Length: 235
Image 1 (tube, rainbow, N blue to C red):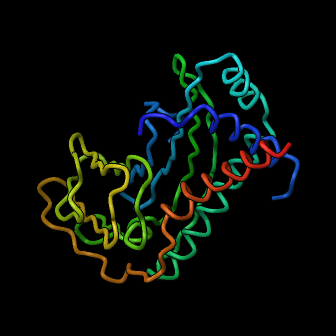
Image 2: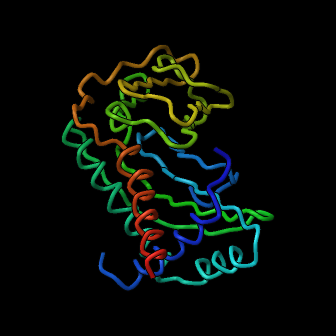
């Protein structure tokens, strides 16, 4: 899944423009669409979702420039993303009994040659459970999360995974990667400092709610874009 289609770009820009008027870590390093969770030793995480759009025609490039230059539209899209993440965090908080919060939601719009890249980011406090030996991650990824793009968890410096299920498609340099479409039901990741022994698991972090980020963030935003495309055809 390298890039989304050109009509999706026009629809996404149309959606953002409407969202600006109707109530409703940072910049991407690689234009590959991805859902990235960058863990800190505290259990907090920088979460980002990256969307990439082909910019093959003048109309597509202009649509992307319109998005880049429309601050209110960008803020509206970021607000939708933040609201959805907070809803997911609230469910995970109830399941785990661990306090969570989503803060500092941002949107970055950039171009890489003929690709337009939109990265939505937020700081997620308390995403991972801290244990005597390190970190444990289950919810919100253990219940109903099947990513529609590459899913990446970056461990803190000096940490390594001692337990992980399901097995990642790739790992290296403190990053574990699962391919788009992987069924992550029952997800569990336990990480400890290198040479520090095994960390305890977080058995309490289980939920029966199939409302993980795969349903709530990427799928919901795709649904909003589809609605914008339909409205555009009717106009």
